Length: 76
Image (cartoon, rainbow, N blue to C red; front, side, top):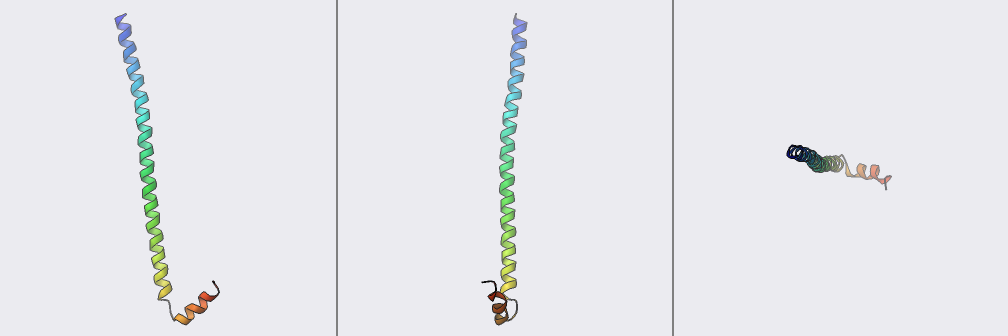
């Protein structure tokens, strides 16, 4: 009887370890996913800021102000 209880406790311990491992793995995966999403959002924001700066630089210094006004007039 004692031997049966020993094996029962060992089996329950193994099963509990598997369940806890899966729960921990899932939580770790969610945490990693959030970090990756935050990193992607920061990279996207930096890329948009850089494109905006390039557009401002190219737009403000691109030729004669009167020509820029004529080109831009139709966009309004």
